[in-house]
Each structure stands twice: as C-alpha cells, then as structure tokens.
Length: 239
Length: 229
View 1 (tube, rainbow over the protein chains, first blue to last red):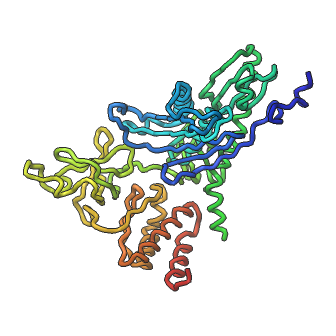
View 2: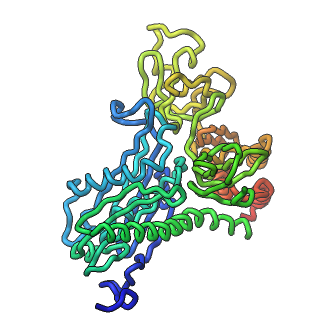
View 3: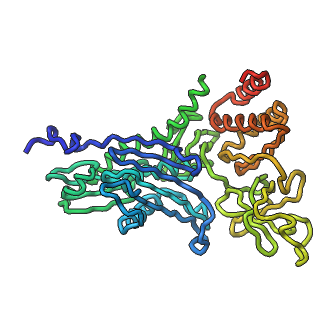
C-alpha cells in the first residue's frame, strides 16, 4: 500500500483535500436572502424567506419562531433522471438540515413566525446535504436573520481502507463509511453528526477531527462569500 | 479586549470583544466573549459594543411610520402586511376615529389591496403591531410608486436630521414617504423624476456602509440636473 501522501483519490485529490468550492451570496433578488454553492460538481441554490407570518396558522408556536426547510433535487440533477416528487431521502435531509441550522438561529425572537429555507439541488455529486447546509447558513446571514454563528458542513469517511475528507458520489457509493458533520466554528459545537457504514472508534475520532478541519476551511469560504458583496461596493466608493 | 477595528465589517459569529462589556444591538454574550449576530459594521462605544446591521428584517417599534398593504379584513379590523414577522392589525376606531358599528361598510373605508401609510401605535401582548391611520399624511395612498429597500438602511436614506431626504426632495421635486419597514412611496410630477429618485435610492442602498454618501448623492443629482447623466 502506498503512503497516504502519495496516494490519490479517483478525482486526483489527496486524502485530506476538499473539492473546489465556490459560494456566492445574494443571487436571488426576490428572496430575503440567498446563496449559490458549487462544491466540486455539486450545484445548489438556496433561498431564505422570513421571518414571516406562518401559514397554516395552527403550526405557529406562541413562544418561538419555527424554521422550515425544504431540500429538493431537481429531476435533471442526477443520472438517470429522478422523480421530482419528494422521496424518503429528501424528507430525511430536509429534517437533517433543520436540525443542523436550528441551533444557530435566535428563533425565540420571532414568536408565531416562520423562517423558510429552500434548497434546490441543480446537480448532485455526493455530499449535497453538507453543501446545502453550508449554503443555507450563508443565505440566512444574507437575509439578516440573527445567527449565533455560521454553520459549515463537511463530510469525512473511509474509502479503500483510508480515512478521506469530503467524499464525492463515487466514494460515497463504493466507500466503507461516510460521516457528514455540521459545525459552528466560533462556538466549537457540532450541530449535525450522522454516520453511514462501519468505522472503528479510533477511525471515528479521526473522521470527526478531519471533518471539523474541513468545516473550518469551508467556513473561510463562507466568510469570503459574504464579505465579497460589500467589498465590491467599497470599490465603487473608491472610484 | 477589542478584536476588530472600529467600523470594520463583521459577520455573524465573529468575536467582537473578550472581557467585561455591555452587549449592544446585534450582539450576544457567550461566556466572556461578545459575538456578532448579523452582518454589519462593528461599533465600540463607551462600555458597550454593537453592530450596525447591513442586512436585517423589519422589527416593528412603537412610533414607526410604515407603508403596508391591506391583505385581509375581519369584523372590526384589517390585516396589514408591513413586512414584519407577523401581520399588523388596523382596527376601525384607529382608522376612522369613531367606534365600530354594524352600519360601517369596511371595504368603503379600506379594501383588500389598498396601500396605506400608517403609524405603529402599540404592540399587543402577542407582539402584533397595532396600526393607526389617524394623523397628518397617514391613510390610503392614492398614487405613486412603491419601492423596497433593506429596512436597516432606511436611516441612511433619511440622513442626519433628515439631511439626505431633504436634499433628494429639493433636487428632484418629488414627494417621498419613507416607511421604517423599508417600503418607500415616491410621488413625482413626471416619470423621469420618479425614475431618478428610484436610482438614487438604489445607489444609497448599495453604498449605505460607506462614508461621505450625502455629498456623493448631491453630486450625482447635480449631474442629472445638468443633463450630464
């Protein structure tokens, strides 16, 4: 077995390398906040609306606001075509997104209201739930919703007996384990931790630490995306 | 201990201060740290640290002038959408000055789809904004152009003691109603005037976080007047 440093993955990355990641904020003028993310071959657009009046009204809670998410894969996002109807997987990721984002939002400040997050996967290549959470956090900040911290999400896992960061579709399907993790870097708290496959306790530790490192790198990209919107305008001032 | 320069751009979760200090607007305390909750410019004051938000939704406060749409009505009151987390309510006494009686035909006073300028007079125990249209300049808006702006940038459009808005009014000859909720009604004598005000407001929105804005806008308007734009 070649050493970890020489070894390359199916797409030519090193074991601890993220895919190329690009985030843009404020891409949808009609939404209160929005973001677009490209993470490798993943392409996801997220729109945030609210805080706004809750409909249907019986779902509103008197002491807190509610976060509603919708994760959806476009029919053309995968090969072969996918049914646009929400699947079990869509519903799971919808819930997972909500759980990952809820701890970061001051929902108690908006009683009887709702914040709606819509994530639309335009092209999927593994790790869409993490990319959706990452983009949703940027969109929430762009919407001016008070946040405790940005949430960055990244996966780690095991492929061909090695621990790897940010699995793509192939590694996700044929690898031994996949561990998506969402993290608030300034608070140091994990808001999502899932695992699929088998890992020993030591491998689990290594995966978590690796995923957290990945989240920190993604966090920097999120920051840049949010700042870029204002720095572009500062140049206007200079002119 | 300060971790940023004064008026530096900060993002949610950024640690603004470590130690004992009061957490001002758009910040919160976590252990011995003060963190930001919104994108904005950090401001270190005397014994306090706060963030001037660049993106924020509208949070109604008593006394605010708002522009909203009547979206529904029930017996004795209207529901008004003012872009707040909940719909606002306008009761018949707050609209007409007299108590509700069964003879009143509510759609004759205000109908669904009307745009109104109103004042937030109270927040009830459910924190629902209560509006009133009794007062000068309030009530149904008959004509004009409604445009939207991020509510947190409204103070920039008004300027120090109204300097910015007075200048825009003077230079363009338009009439403007600025709702604190980010909806602005522009009434001009010609479409050209209205278009110019919209352009100016868009520019203020873009450059709200920069300094010397009033002077730049004045220069911009002068160019327009001289036909150099």
